[in-house]
Length: 345
Image 1 (cartoon, helix red, strand yellow):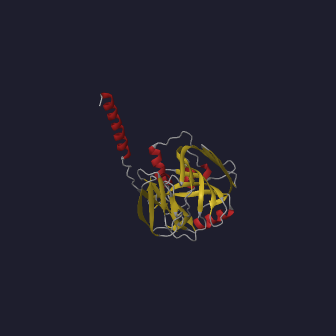
Image 2: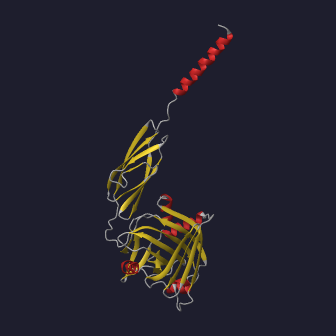
Image 3: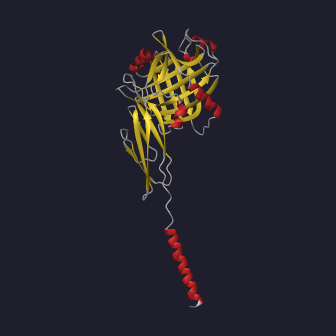
């Protein structure tokens, strides 16, 4: 055999040897895995699944007795309406191979709120916190049951409750709450709340001791700017906006907003002090909850501005609490159902 033929034979042998090695390369091992996060909502538990599987391209989920009961999404969200132990199964596949993982979760804290008059299914609005230096007006708005706080902080918002249950009429509201001190702790106390629906007004007054009145309220979503304007029955007005364009919040400011949100709210109903709570039982601030469930809550920080006018009102009024320092604000869209409760402190 001459050298040319020998060289050709070696090349052909190497070619087939290479093909054989490629054909025998093992497929990456599929690992089916996921994490769960449980959030209690109004009469239900919402479970968010985070898929951390490896080397898979398709996913098949099953959630017996959940809603939905099946899904092919990569990171689905499901809900349960009763306490109990539930299994969640994931089949992760690459088209030829698959692996299955099943875990059990225990849900035991769904509140029974069958008599809640309002169930808020979806809402959005703008929210801001600021300090004021109007001591005279601030003191005049604090009921005798409460004391002056460590600093004069105001919480103001516009909220559009556009989807409700139990046949309730959608409505908008504008509100001002002030920081107060009671028995050595600080709480927020609502001192102003015009709304656009009379049924909501009376439900808030009778059920929760809120100072609701009727008003003309508008809310606008002109992304990246969200704004609201309101006029009460006395002719007082508030205009407020959150500009989210190219806005970056300082970590210290963000933490301050979280700390303020974690403070509870007190009202006075029929001469008794009650604490207002969320039926979901969530102890986090809405900022923390939005970070945990970004597919259920949209939160955008932004530059907050507010102006009020009380020229038509001849006495001290919550709208007189103008800002001396704006702490921060944000736009929020919430799709987690909830209700409000009022319990004796």
